[in-house]
Length: 368
Image 1 (cartoon, helix red, strand yellow):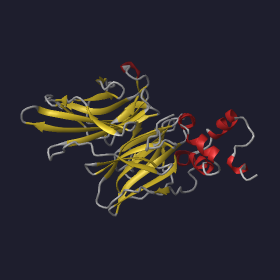
Image 2 (tube, rainbow, N blue to C red):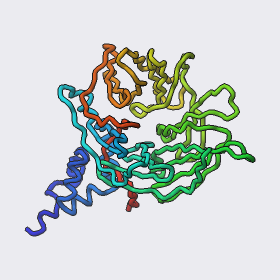
Image 3 (tube, helix red, strand yellow):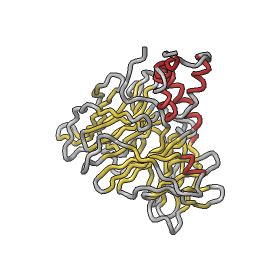
Image 4 (cartoon, one colour):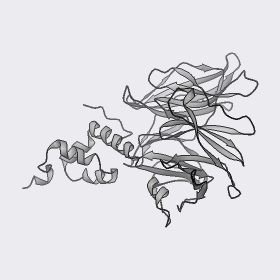
């Protein structure tokens, strides 16, 4: 009887596995403390990957709010489902503890993948963080030299072939002898090390974080020699390290600005005709230019004071939008807006990041 609590119930292992992979992360964290057998099962790499697939398929998303307030970084999270479909009463997000935050340091979410967040702190510090399981890893220094004339851009994604999470750091600077050069360094979570890749000359990358789609990171870029300031989309394949360009949709010329995004795992272009409308383009089949589809034209109205940015689009054509430091919900079928009742810390530099809660650890453990 003394060892009863340390054994699994008398059910087939396969049945227990199928039950557990359908549970939320919070429940699994509690169950890991019940017995060594459950801890071993839930911690196994096979279980982690299967659980992640179930969570992604169910679209059990959460929304991370990050902002600087009174010289302090704050992180909060709230269920996306609650924001979208339970709007009768205000939602109070759960505050998250980020262990390494320091005052007067500018932190920025530079990417998220499989429940892991990559966060930069100043010009040197990088972290991988899973807020769902409260695990954090500070990455070693990349070795890049950043000068006053340099810019730094980041990307974060997953290499499925190697089962490895990668952080890409791009440092661009001008050299008197070599012209404009970009130095790429790639961090591997599996090896816990950085490596330098070949340089990418004569291109300026937008320092917005890269968008990870289809195993590739995507930045907006411009050729240094281009006198017309014509921007294009450059991609980096995390499997073989090759670069390529991605064709844009046929955007309407005029007083507009565009940026990259992702919706439901697809690459997007948000074309903002300021104070008129924002067109949302989605590449339905990756790499196929003919598959670019305009899925919505979101009109501005007098109460919209800031630029809007799509965060999520539902199957019934409702689009969750970031509007400054608040949220809006636009229904394209009925052409109306709602204000989700969410209590948000109104600091500066607020970011809204969609993610799936997972058991993926930033502290890599080799599968045995």
